[in-house]
Amino acid sequence: MSVLVTILASLPVLWVLYILYPVLRTKWCAETNVKQRYDAEWALVTGATGGIGQEICTTLAKQGMNLIITSPTAENLSRLREKLQSSYEIVVETIAADLSLGANHAPPQFIQDLKDRTAALDVRVMFLNAGYAHVESLLTPSAVDQVKNLHTNAIINVYLAEWMMQRMAKAGARGGAIVATSSCVSFVPTPAAPMYGPSKALLAAFMDSIKPEASLLGVDLLTVHPGPVRTAFFDNIAKTPAIRMMVQCGSTAESVVKSMFQSIGHVSHRDITVIGVLCHLFAAVVGSPGVGWIADRVLFKVASSEYKRYFRGPLQAAEEARKRV
Ligand SMILES: NC(=O)c1ccc[n+]([C@@H]2O[C@H](COP(=O)([O-])OP(=O)(O)OC[C@H]3O[C@@H](n4cnc5c(N)ncnc54)[C@H](OP(=O)(O)O)[C@@H]3O)[C@@H](O)[C@H]2O)c1
Image (cartoon, rainbow, N blue to C red):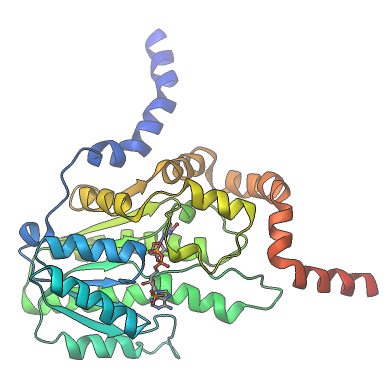
């Protein structure tokens, strides 16, 4: 009886340790050298010009990897290419593309450009890192922009994963890595940016779902879930007290990318920063219905003045229309 009680009593602890395992497993690992581990020459980095993307590029450049870097802004890409090529003995190719654009379910032009530009290159390492949060109420309305957000953060990566793995399969190549930058909000709702959290959850679930073909090709998959990071990510988001607090608590892109490289080849998911770990634990302990209930009963009420700041215009219009009825 006492053994049974001990086992039952230790279940919550084992559950927490299970959630924390990737952090504990990789916290003290050396950063993985992808060039050596996968005998790779080229890596693709999306969202390369941002805070996290630039750190990824610098780490890869230090390892001697040649880079294909993308972002929507050609000038930012040229500047980053100059900086990397003048500091490290590597070659950097740039492709400027807005990844939010996809038409009629056809592969975006970016994928054709990528195929043309990389036909002779052996790309077996990819960092699916481009992303942003579109903060706007559906009452505005904003569905088209919300879907663009989904396309950039998640859908484009379906094309990219297919592109890399098909090429590897045809060439009989083995060994590589795909690293996706998800977010701690993939575990919780993001009411002011209704597609941001869901797009990051979709990205994480997609990565889990391509495990069979990735394993066949010896491609390691890693999805990282960082908490807030002090980058330009927050530049286009209104600085309400909650957002300001989040930025202040944020970690640096450098420490996030260090954790990312410590995890490559060791685990398939990694929560990064204390807030990242807490979000995952919270969602794991209370489950989806619990997250929804707490969001509705607690979060939205406590933070209602925050949401009203964002949605003042559309909320007022809806309220006035309701009064007229
Ligand atoms: N910062 C955080 O708190 C945080 C937390 C968790 C996860 N993340 C995720 O981490 C990733 C990197 O974010 P970051 O913090 O480094 O933010 P960032 O500094 O704003 O960088 C975002 C990158 O994505 C690119 N990008 C933006 N919109 C794009 C579009 N429509 N098409 C193609 N590329 C686009 C940006 O290009 P330009 O430079 O040309 O604008 C930039 O290179 C994102 O996926 C983000 O969701 C961030």
